[in-house]
Image 1 (cartoon, rainbow, N blue to C red):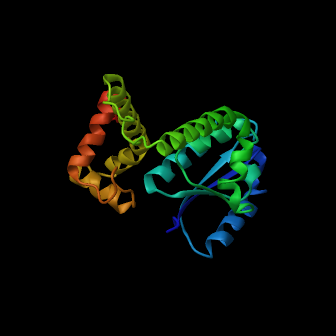
Image 2: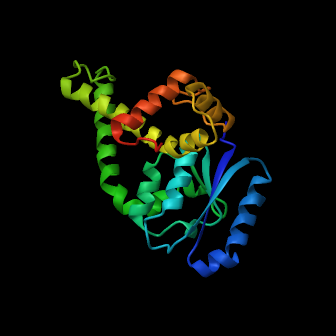
Image 3: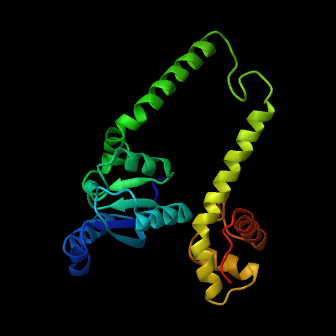
Length: 230
């Protein structure tokens, strides 16, 4: 089933446009018209920044919100993002679904074209790997796991590191939201869990938050330097 939750991202190039709403109203209308056919708009983020720059703090916040709510990032026009291959590649690696109102295919077609240069070598390697695996399977080799060998210490270490990095990113995404919940008066683990549930943010493995899960996230803050301000 297609995700029906959306986070909107709008961008204008100048402070003047940001203050006057020039261009911004049209973007918002395009998104609202699209979602009138179905979809819940959870929140909106507006950036005042040149399209040539990759440093987009509001976009970073929008992507974090998409991961927290398991929502799709929606923009009015594809050119509201950037023409930078590096920027588009970072967007693709964010793990966030993406939709452009004026070109819905962009999340699978145009984004890949824009990122073609950066993706080219990786795609070649991937194609060669798939061909080798297909040939091995045709020879009767059983695929899966560590390809018919025991996992080495390095394999296990890399797997642990990948899980840790994912947990750290999730904790970083949650930091601002948990701080807001605590500042609103929720100090116990159960109260924080309730605040996350009320905001529609699911636990790391899906489902509702419980005190133990909040405690694990707070421990991530302590071990990674993401300590919440008192």
